[in-house]
Length: 193
Image (cartoon, helix red, strand yellow):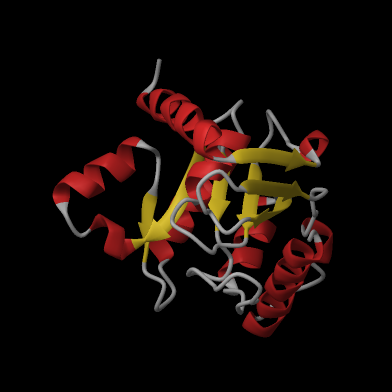
């Protein structure tokens, strides 16, 4: 058993004890093909919930570089398949890593707003999300996690239908085009609730 599966199974036992996790739209989960899983982000537990919900495959998360500051934390994150991104600029190495993973039919997890956003609020999307989706030709799977994470509360996970952005590529796209398409992804996520 891989380290990722061990940690996911352990997390599943713990989280299913403390929370009532309910999945809506699990028929939309892509099990074998490349996929860009895009979710809202209100709490540190969100990646764990996604790992539990998508239990048939490993999700490789793009995570803020600050989480990799300490050697032990960085080792743990990398063992789970996460890799760092600099949220303050165009991080080409992170984008290349994302495209390489998707080319290998992996699942990539991204929080399009780039940071945690208060429950009930909507943040602004990073334009790189649409760029990665279009360049990789990977479908975007919108996910909305609805919970306050209070002990023994419900965690509702809404999974939308895959979005194919490859048909949006008509000529050369600029940053404004990517930003607009990324905003559309955010709207699709929040429309799930």
